[in-house]
Length: 237
Image (cartoon, rainbow, N blue to C red):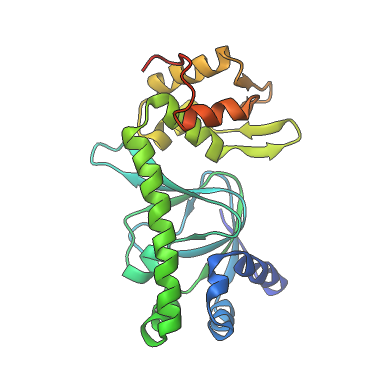
């Protein structure tokens, strides 16, 4: 269940706006958009927005992922977004959405009115150009993630997504996602992902935590594997 906030919660919306690419928009656009906004806390694992409906979400805190589904029911993560980033810019402009957003951790989010953004984009060239620049950034992020999923080895893909999913905690960088969620993220199956994780643990890159989750012990090695720079034998793919 989502908790809806009002009143002083919109102060967080303004701060998130200032940290996002939306800060490039004129102040009048910002004020109009935030006047219609509302703030929601989305628990971990919950869907953000509604399928096939335009959703425009400004993230205050937490980590989210954007997922596409195939005809066979398999899914793949095409983008991650955290504090100060925006979900749904493409759906707001196109007035439709082929994607679903999920909260990886508990997220505090401002929902903005897509119709208002489209109206400003259609009537103000400054807004239209700024949105085009932001769309280009999002496209590069998605292409980068898809390219890694398509051309990378399973070890590269798993390592990349582990780094994206990691949250800093007192122990260090911790990933709470299980094997099933990782398999969904990389577009593979759980058994294949399990072999890759086992190999990374044997190399001392990862360690299981007693309370659950994985601690990234050697992030520099994981970054090397993700980038294809580490030639050590991992899962053997």
